[in-house]
Image 1 (tube, rainbow, N blue to C red):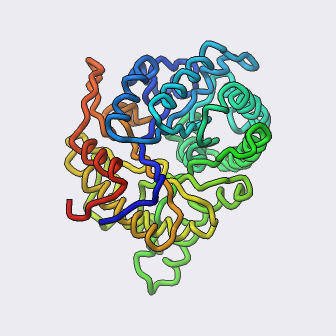
Image 2 (image 1 turned 180 degrees about the horizontal axis):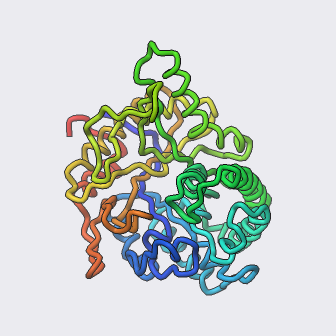
Amino acid sequence: MVKFPQGFLWGSATSAYQVEGGIENCDWSKVYPAGIACDHYNRYEKDFDLAKSLNQNAHRFSIEWSRIEPREGEFDQTEIEHYRKVLLALRKRGIKSIVTLWHWTNPVWLAEKGGWTNQEAVNYFARYVKKIAEELGGLIDFWVTLNEPMVHIAAGYIDGRFPPRKKNLPQALRVLKNLIKAHKSAYGIIHAKYPLARVSIAQAVSYFEPASHWCPLEILFADIGDYLSNRYFLLKVKNQLDYLGLNYYFHNRVVWYPPFVKNLNKKITDIGWEIYPEGIYHILKNLSRFKKPIYILENGLADAKDEKRKKFMKDHLHWIGKAVEEGIDCRGYFHWSLMDNFEWEKGFSSRFGLVEMNYKTLERKPRPSAFYYAKICKENQLEINS
């Protein structure tokens, strides 16, 4: 049996573009339209009832910038009031809020100005953050300024999968510089109004492991991968982090020859991602050097038949529990996701939800793994033999 600390946060996560529906004024909507998605915008109360019934005491979601500021410098008070109702609905149910301010989507007006390649984007973001802090800050328990900034850079400006679909290293470096500035600025704005606020980013982390521990090149390349992917951004903003927010999905066995990564594990998700629970333990141990409380803000898998999710959660939580027992200050776990949703460039085919979505009827149906997780949430412990 693995017991978790008192006050441990148990929840699930979503993002606005992936679940809300009706977002048509952002850069993603012009390339990968999500349509009505899960209609969470209109059904959030019922979705939070579901989360509550599944014993979750915390929920991570994002505020859609393009709703709040649909035109440059113009704020939509109706949308601000909508998110106030969302936050109050969580509070009414005793569910703590972890609020992401930017989860990859940019208002069209910002995209037309060059997005994050434009140095003024830092000021635009600061203006938006200031408005959220003034209007909604008193209802927010944890702040996440940016979601996976390094993924946005890699997929948007290096391999071109995400908007704006560029393959331009100089632009990627400019975006990196501006996102670092944006977080630092947002952190200052939030803390100016709420000195005790808990503010961080959601950092995508992968476990880089040398394929052989006797090859100096593979050890070196693994460390370089870890530094660039996991630590670089965190090091640049380490004085503007009240906790570490980590998203863990990937494990990379590093070899010395191209393509430098080799997956030897046959356990994969529906979309081919390797399942390697032990990696989360090594990540927690490695990043404990920052001496900050740690929250796992995303961890999940695409598993339409719900055949692997229970074991996936059990194994990852076992390794998180081991780290906690060894003194690592991990205080929360958020499964991705509460419900099936729009998985970015992959569309609706990838099923990450604890709750199954029928996209024709919008019916929600908890999967068996949701009830397994609910038991863990309720008891604040993991039965190893369950």
